[in-house]
Image (tube, rainbow, N blue to C red):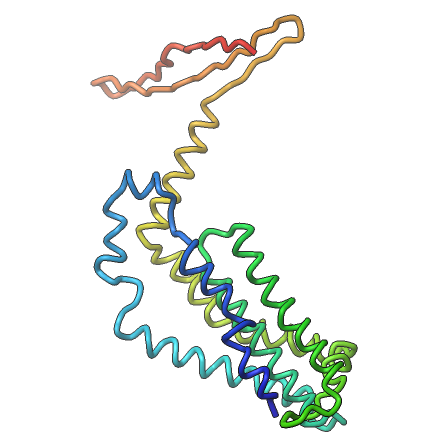
Length: 248
C-alpha cells in the first residue's frame, strides 16, 4: 500500500530537518533572561519536562493520530475508484504533514530557520513524489506508481483529506497544551509574561515630543508614586518629571 521508497526516505529526508532545528536552535527563553534568572535551569536539571509517564502519553497520542490518519482516508475514499497506490499515497502524505505539524507545535522560538526547515521538508516530499511518479514507468524491483501523485494532487478530495486529518489529529494536543498554558503555566512562561509586562510598562512611561521648529527630540519619562497618609484618607502625589533632551 505504501511505496517502499517513501518508507526509506520518510525519516531520512522528509522529516529529518525540523527535529534538527528543534534540538539545536530552539530555545524557551533568551540568554539574558536565563542569566538573570538561573532558577529557570531547574526545569532541565530536575527533568521536569519528560517524566516517567510522558512515554505512555506520547504512545497514546501516536495511536490516536495513526487511527485518525487511516480512518479519515478510509472514509473519504470508500466506495470510490481509488486503487491501492492512490490510497497509500494519501496515507503517506497525511503521515508526513501530521508529523511536521506535530514538530512545529514543539517550537518555542520561531525563526526563519524553523519555518525554512518545515517548508523545505514539504518541498522535498512533494518534489520527490512528483519526479518519482513521473519517471518510474517500469522500474525493476519497484511498484508502478506512474502518475499517482499527479492524479492525487489534482483532486479536491486529496487536499480535503489532508486538511481534515491534520485538524483532527492535532486537536487533543492543542487542547491539552492550551489548558496547561492557562491553568498551569511553567516557570519559563511566568518569567516571559513578567518580562513582557515590564517592557510594556516602560514603554507606556516614555513620552516623546517633537516640534517642527526645533531640531531637538524631547523624551519625557514620567513616574507616578502613591504615598499614603497615616490617617483614614490618602493623597496621591506625582513625582518630578525628568526631561532628557536628545540631539537628533
